[in-house]
Length: 103
Image 1 (tube, rainbow, N blue to C red):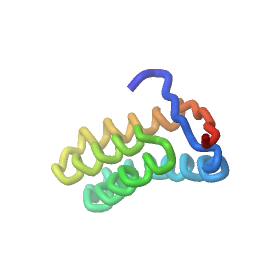
Image 2 (tube, one colour; image 1 turned 90 degrees about the horizontal axis):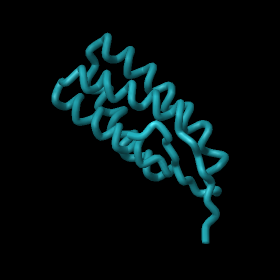
Image 3 (cartoon, helix red, strand yellow; image 1 turned 120 degrees about the horizontal axis):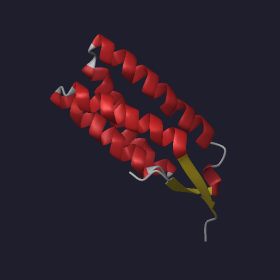
Image 4 (cartoon, rainbow, N blue to C red; image 1 turned 180 degrees about the horizontal axis):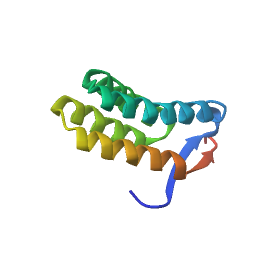
């Protein structure tokens, strides 16, 4: 992942994006708490949800991160979950949104 993250988002989603990104910020906090509880089932569910939703909102990188988190939870790999949660946090904090009009 580059230091300059750009997501090309359909302008029709403009009102939904702030809440979507806030929810992913909350996911970072929740996953960190779930790691302390060793709740891999819920971490897997959150990863699966991100994997499914990211691309629909124009955040393909969130889908990729979600897939890594889901796979790591299934494998019981806590270190990958921790790393990918940090990657998610950094992505959310640094992503630049470019609004696109439908042609």
